[in-house]
Image (cartoon, rainbow, N blue to C red; front, side, top):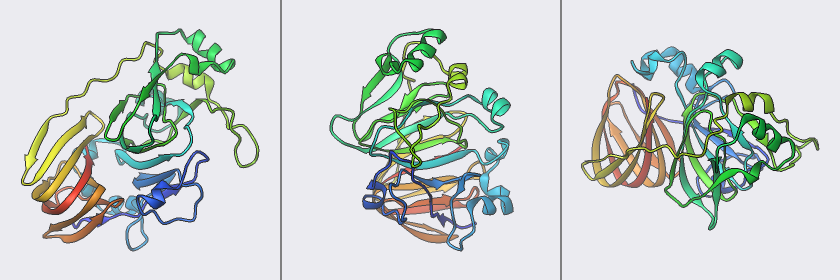
Amino acid sequence: MQPIKLTPVYKDYLWGGERLKTDYRKQTDLMPLAESWELSCHKDGSSLLGDGSTLSDYVQKHPEAVGTRGAEFAYFPILFKLIDAKGDLSLQVHPDDEYALRVEHEYGKTEIWIVLDCEPGAKLIYGFREKITKEQFRAKIADNTILDVVNFMPVKKGDVFFIEAGTLHGIGKGIVIAEIQQNSNTTYRVYDYGRLDAAGNLRPLHVDKAIDVTNTEQFQEVALDHPVRTAGDCTITTLADCSYFKTERMELDGECTLSVDKGSFTGLFCAEGKVVLESEKGTLQLAKGDTAFLPAGMGAYTLKGKAQLISMGV
């Protein structure tokens, strides 16, 4: 099976901006452009192949392309997106698998954020400053003082945040993020800055469900190992390796040869620069903003160029 360059699905949530168009070459008439679903088989939007078919169609026809580890999941395991937060995202939480499968009939959502760029002074919300009770949580939502108890974290380009299901969180304005997550679109919103949608209505909150699933203990950042290895002229840093996904940052200046085994597909996103991907199955040119799907079992491939890439699989 050959490597495939993907065309994303776009989302125009009200807090989005224009940076995915200007900085990452996304071509859409949507204004604002909030998210670009780069590698997705989700029912709310599947990535497209060059012939106009979807990645979902492809993996249904070629289930072996997901790999033997990927086959252990009930459906395609991950979703990779770019997020341009011109405005603050809502304060929100995602359920774990047990709750989500029981209540929403899809997986929960653990995710990792990689800060691609940000404005000076940008920050995000990650958990609570101190432990609170569920009753206090509900009261803070009701009287619009929830921001008084959350944990704000300053961010800089290159930062990595691992967001476990059940963690209260919110991306702040001025941040562009690459997000690798479980294949889920279930979000419980608890605070939205009083914003109105296009029809002039407040966007709905999901208070009861959020209280059910949110971890209200004091913030504790998840400690991740970031082992580093080299392959040819490429330095590869593991950003996360959990039961849901594995993702790595690759700094290439020259040439390296890697391989996609039968265990998992590889998603490959070009965050900076340009690279040529060569294999016996086909050749692709990737520039900043491009994402490719490398099917499981594709075998060896060579990358040539000067680029920063993010890879993902299971």
